[in-house]
Image (cartoon, rainbow, N blue to C red):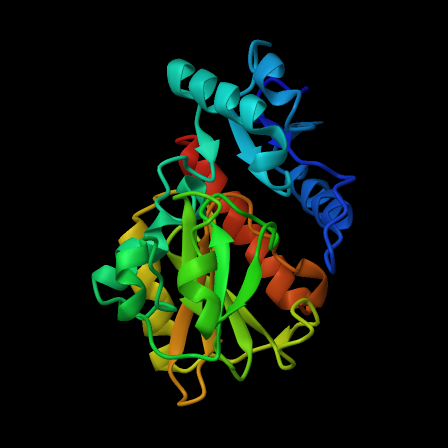
Length: 281
């Protein structure tokens, strides 16, 4: 490693079998570009806690490391060690979105934010809009793990039979899903899935000023100074956007969908963010 270059521990699971996404390809590309500015060591999330005891890393980058539920103990140990050491992490580990589970969907609903209405208590089911079916999923779920659809007539009997850590939402017949990608607080690009049944068949999306104001509201709420965030939303039948999730831990970036200029701009902005994180600008 060159002595005058920042040294990064890049956490990724290159072999994670994500449906519709190629984690390995994305992080191989991203690290190939980051090496222009940084010295890198790649590691699996299970190895990250032990490698943090090795001297010489200036910061940690967490990218496509898979759902934390698959390595919860290692992730908890990782968080404890970087916090104790004061090691800079990208994305910053103070996120209030998916980093902390899905409780934020309940909280934002109660605060009147434009999210898919979400409750987590049987006594609040009456606050949800009427729907033919409802989505029931665990607060700590990821990649649709544990998600199920419950008819309205069975909701009160089935929604909470697995315990208290469940979320309930109306199943919305949305037009499409759209994602807004950010580095720090700066918008980078947007992609959407024109067909609701093909979530990861994405195309470029040109957001309106109202779309960007919608996404920025959640970025501002989350208040992360350094890192990558993805605001996932759906276009409701009446035309409004509703938040689906705020991915602030390891959002897949779909870099392969982008044109060269947009991809190069994202990489340049991500590099600049890392240099700022390290106090080198």
